[in-house]
Length: 315
Image (cartoon, rainbow, N blue to C red; front, top):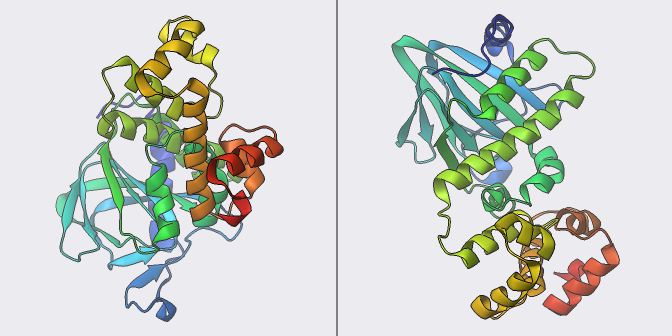
């Protein structure tokens, strides 16, 4: 697969991380409080790290079936490998150019036993970091929001995402840069790599939407999709500019097709997102208000009470 970035520096960084793979802090252990016998893999990075990159290179890997207490994204950078999922019997081949995204505590094991070697690049994100920081970015694009929120509702939800990433996607460039930065760490590495990981998840979300979310062919469906994606900042003027119509025309067209005004649709989408975030995360109300487009928290409280007939702190 031809990639935008595959320089000698990238190759050397990946090889360096591959040599360090066996010396990572592998610490599989049971967790009796869960009532399950599955092994749990705890954070592999340093205690002060929120994001890390690891690399497996070789033609044999036989991980024990386990669960992990962090979010992870595995990329088949070169060659292919198999995953064993929660049923202890379902194997999925991850081919070159594909990725596998797992939630905390989803059951998983990587397997490989062939003459052909493979390179797997993993991006690991602490659970708390993802919920408190990354989710702010995911909230503007609901394509994968429910997937990332599911562990908050069901710790052992065992869901995953498996998809191909086009060779020209910026994902590969970001992944290469992250590997280079993490292979030769400096005191500023976490400050550099964390925003990269945020961008990576946004590109993956956009690709997931393209592959799995069917776009409506009629104008009103496309309008709703745009509002869903741009909830934080959408206005009637920006909507009109995007679709090439006059704002007055859209202000009349939208109620004719939906029975709701533009502002009512925006409110409905914002309140639905707010409800999901309040119910399934411990994010502060003020942060959730900002995430869905309210710069003034008082306005959010007022809108929320009018919509749900209760305070956001009581939901």
